Amino acid sequence: MSISRKTLVTLENAGWFEGRSIDIREIEENLKKLGYFVFEEVKLFLMEFGNLIIEDKENEEIHDTSLIFTDYYSYGSFKSEEKYAQENLVPVGKIDSGYLILFVSETGKVYCSTGKLGDSPLEAWENLISGNGGQEWE
Image 1 (cartoon, rainbow, N blue to C red):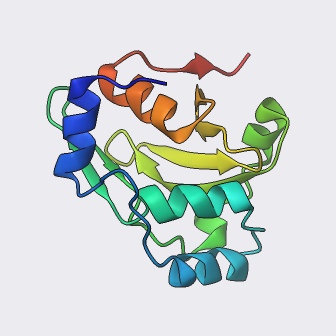
Image 2: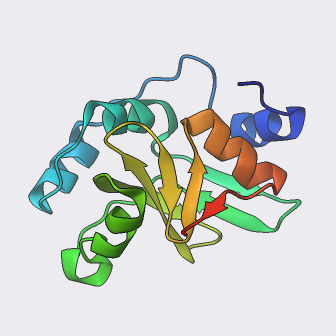
Image 3: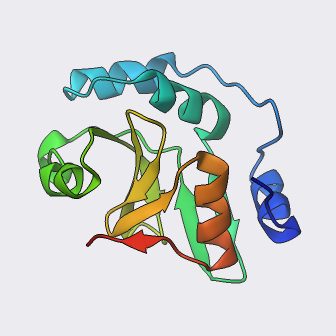
């Protein structure tokens, strides 16, 4: 998957770089306390893209993967989103300036509250930042 220069620069300005791998123990522990099983694909996403605040100036949006979900009841179990995705989802941040929850599935696909953003994290960031969007729930 190739990503556009715009997406690459936007991610790099947030602190992302190819090969990035952060310590996710605190994030993983927090998600487990809330009852989520942290799949390997979720761990890989968080190591590479966790703890970033991505400012998409062209679309005037902020995407935040530095969030620690602390209140299960505020965010719920996302059963309706899992029904549409037909797989288990784990929240990994908020996008669209906090209006939508960002999820990674057990197979590594990336979703938001309104649909699928991509089959991989880079495809999802490209669709989100380039303005292509994703596939809405059917």
